[in-house]
Length: 394
Image (cartoon, rainbow, N blue to C red):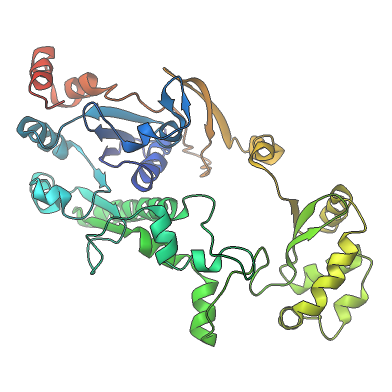
């Protein structure tokens, strides 16, 4: 038994933010039915890299789902869609706000068919505000949110974060919203709209940047790899590489000084507390840098780990794929795909002791489950399904 077993989700999403949300639900046991445009499918099916013509990008976001093709601009396609709605607990879409309303398939119409439906909408700017109708991609949101302005080398150019953090964060907040709405439904018996904007999601995770500006009035700038208010909390060059070191409190700072053979630094009136170390960073940084260059990365890592000081090399993705902790937590899993063969995908990060999630199936091929789902859910005969195909509804 999985945590979300029995939950049925109609997934109209594409590319990243929405599919990430529905992937989380599917991984935890929900029956996610992915609705795709006939002959085309999710845009992500056309993003590389490819394995035997199948998109690895798409496969990484759509495991554990079933795919049905449905033309929502076709009258018969809309009819099938409306027949599915009473059977669903959740609908997730990431169209521009108003798209489904213009088809007569918006929330107000759908809740007449299913008052318990949770309607989750993820978009660039949400369902309200002056930007609600604007298109958005992750890079646009990273720029607009201010995230790029605090990312990059010190005194360098603003830099996009190396993963699509705006999309993924919006997807995670959408998942939280869906689960919250489901909990509320247990009390009220009614569904509701979950409205998540990518811009909102990134502004919500700006944490210390917002706090610093609100208190000091100083505009945060890129700090490179150092933390803006914790010292030392950054990489240092060693004899043969780099190590990330994070002495996040004064106890760890004293331990670090002992390991470095410079215990007097812990009592130095310039460096004894974190606010002092931050204020006197320009004096402290060269002292620490000189010491770290005296040994190899492996040597320093062993000493710091033994002392309990958080430390890590800056791993490449290839090294992460072999990392013993990552492997021990089943965070890289092989799964068989009917076209691509055996592929490796990230595992499930939420570890539940009694109702764990599972990777039950690879991402579906386009429309792979259309006939089976129409028969299973709506009782359609092969002849009726053939008619829908002929009319361009599927």
